[in-house]
Length: 210
Image 1 (cartoon, rainbow, N blue to C red):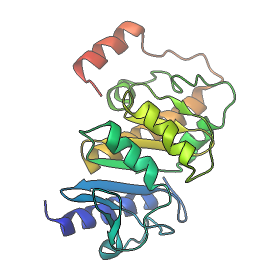
Image 2 (cartoon, helix red, strand yellow; image 1 turned 60 degrees about the vertical axis):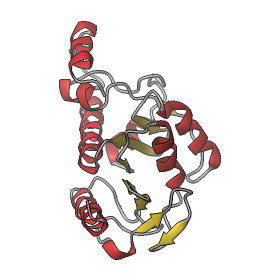
Image 3 (cartoon, one colour; image 1 turned 120 degrees about the vertical axis):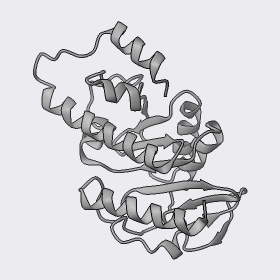
Image 4 (cartoon, one colour; image 1 turned 90 degrees about the vertical axis):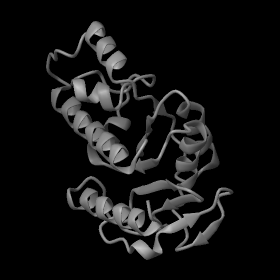
C-alpha cells in the first residue's frame, strides 16, 4: 500500500475516533507499520484534525526521518511491534470508560474486564493492567513490553488502553470494543450480571484466537 494512502487512513480513522468522543484534545495516538519503519501521529497533535503530510515517520531504528516529532508515547507502540511480529498497527486512547475502569481499586490486574460479551472475548480476550508510570516513562514502555508477547491489548493504570492489531482497522475496532465493554462493565457493576461461562469463553478463544 502506498504510504500516502496509509497516512490518509490514519487521519480519517483518527478523526472518526475524535468525533465520536473516544479521545479528547491532544490525547491519544496511532501508529502503523510500513515497509521501512513506522508512521505515528505527532506529539501534541489532535486526532480530530491531522495533516497526513505531517504524520511522523520513523525508520527501523526509530529515528525520525520525516514529519513532525512523534508522540512521546512512541515507546509504547514500539514495544508492541517488537514483541508481536504480526502487528500492523497500534492504537492508544484515553477513552473515558476504559480510563475509568483503569482507576478502580478492586479490579483483577491479571484480567481487568470479565467476559460480558462474545465480541469482547473475540477481539480482546484477556486484558491485563499495567502498573502506573508517568506518560513517556521508560519503565512504562518496559512494563508494556513484558506483557506484549502474551497480550495484544493492555490497560495502563490511570491512563488508558494500548491495543495492537494486524491492520489499522483491526486495532481501531478492537479498541472500540474494549471501550464499549468498559462502559457496560461500569453500568452493570452494582448489578448481578450473567457473564459468559468458562466453557463458552474457551470455545470462542479456540474459534477466534487473538
